[in-house]
Image (cartoon, rainbow over all chains, first blue to last red; front, side, top):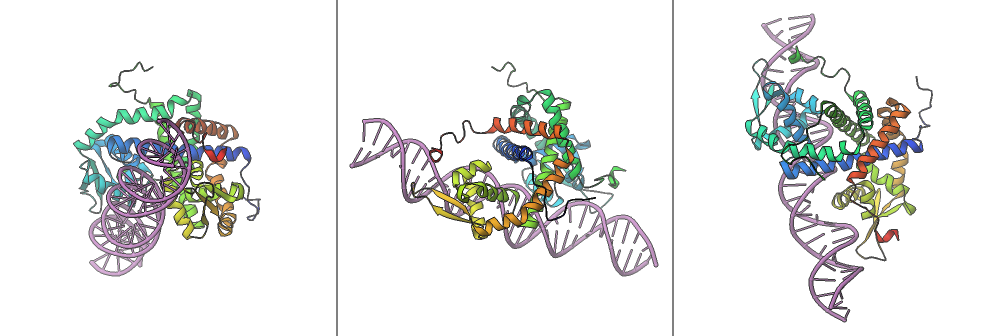
Length: 167
Length: 167
DNA sequence: CTCGATTGCTTGAAGTATCAAGCTCTATGA
DNA sequence: TCATAGAGCTTGATACTTCAAGCAATCGAG
């Protein structure tokens, strides 16, 4: 399956390097940019905002911790800490799960929903300005496709396909 | 310049949302993946590794702090902390700047160079497997182009064009 | 020359991330 | 039905990031 010997690595070509560096630069800059924007306007980092969004879109504005972690692509541990912080802010509340006493729901509070309502326009504007305003429709499409492929390759295999809550 | 009223945000279209979510998923997954890979094999996070690479490529394996921060797209503060840690590892050393007594150079040590030599193949393999093996040449090119455009838009205007060290 | 503004970099505190270890509860199968 | 393995989530320690504040050296206007 692998014809190259292990001690002779295939380095990146010049063109591949350029692509890779562009990727690194863009992602670090954009990540920072959006973190700052949201920290300033919403008082939380980008990923926390994403958690609120995920909850807001879920039925009854609630998700099991594990499911939320998967949607957000983060570990349960990280999520636990994050939810603890959001709970302190009054934007999320925990609820026990009846059918499985180990389980916890994270529930978006009205206050949390309100924060989202108030800050979403600014955030969308920031994303639009940094990304969509700069790319042609074709470029947007290509970006989406490339990102989808990369994400698929990294997703834990068959992730989530066997979660009991999803029937 | 702006014909839309400020209180009527232009939401993302469905297709734009799909692109944006693919971007978020891919970047968080890949970032985590590479951080883990490098933490395991090289004992440092991805961005620290990038600092060593930047130094390795610089003349005399040394760069002014500010220049290094710009190349890595991070704040000086973050760089200060990072270099302190790398210094503790013996991979980087600081040197005073003769022509400007406020200035500091970060210099890659032989040990640091050796760490790079030893861990680069594994890292390149990880990048290749996660990114380049999954994208056609056209897709790679498109990804690079999109990322370049995004990065350009976020770069502090005329960044670095006026650094005295660069003449 | 001199003083105020700026540049280059660092520091400390507070917030967030990661890892391993832990707890409780559920499912499995003998 | 009971023990054991695993699932679901949390915790605490350590590392990293961020922000604001700080110090010292340089620049530039007068």
